[in-house]
Image 1 (tube, rainbow, N blue to C red):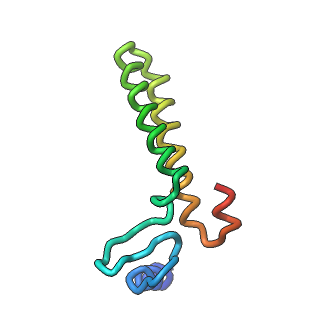
Image 2 (cartoon, rainbow, N blue to C red; image 1 turned 30 degrees about the vertical axis):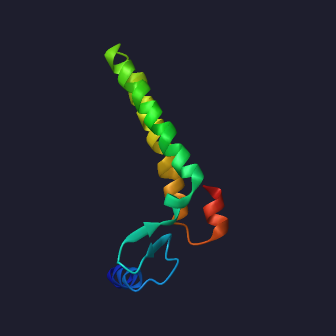
Length: 95
């Protein structure tokens, strides 16, 4: 296990392209594949709207509904991000 973690770290440092959805530009900044997906951007927008609605539900003391909306808002973008780290295109499409 220790060897794998070490080799994965080295491959990300020396990355010149796709490595589990992570790329490194010339300045050393990391970029993730999901950040360029329109569907991920839309999921973030919808999530923000759900958080606004949840805030209103909190003011009405509907805490359980607010909690569920926040979880749903995070789940959409997180699932897309998780899928973008897949090794294969087939696995990525499942997300």
